[in-house]
Image 1 (cartoon, rainbow, N blue to C red):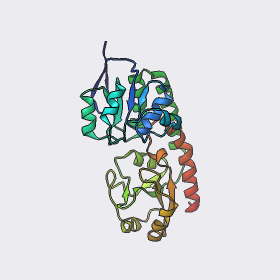
Image 2: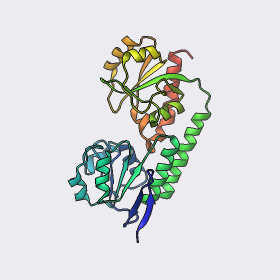
Image 3: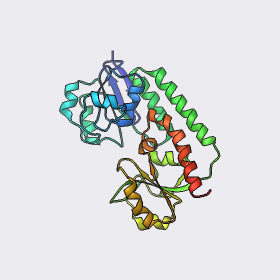
Length: 269
């Protein structure tokens, strides 16, 4: 008997095996979620970027990257469910996979999207109770953050180096920035625009956050920014906690509180 589900792109996903016994995950944050839902044995393959949990990254078969999938390796795993994401994965590759396997896709911009993704993954994998409990816990934590009085801090969040690129509106990062008390100076732009350091300097954000991923900004990159933007506080930011939309969000709220407090103190709010 087949089981029919709909993913976050409103695609119909038909599972002939339910609950699925061999799952391939194409997105790091969703891979970690699967393990946290107790699907250790069911996860048959993951990408080279699925680094959490580390022991699973070391032991599970890898099927390439999020945008460069090895179709032969996936075929060898004989998956009865593949889980991907609209932004993270290549559309043509996903369409090709969907010709052969059930592919469930997430599409996440808001906190609500992330919570719904967790619950939906719970339904499609047969882990409803664990997924609903996790989503409820994360929702409560983020509500406590929203209820916490804090002065907004104008900010830019950079994700790439030469060309410089920032997170803007229509992204999950922008949603997390707002929730954490940061007012994105590039909210008038969409997605991940290229910017110049002159543009950044003219905007004069109170803080410039340099993400640890996808480009791994380090201390050595901070000097270049500080020279161009002497009036801004420059900080390294944990990219996983700003952009991963799975169970890692449990760690995000205390991190956001500490980061906002640290920056507020530096700019003497």
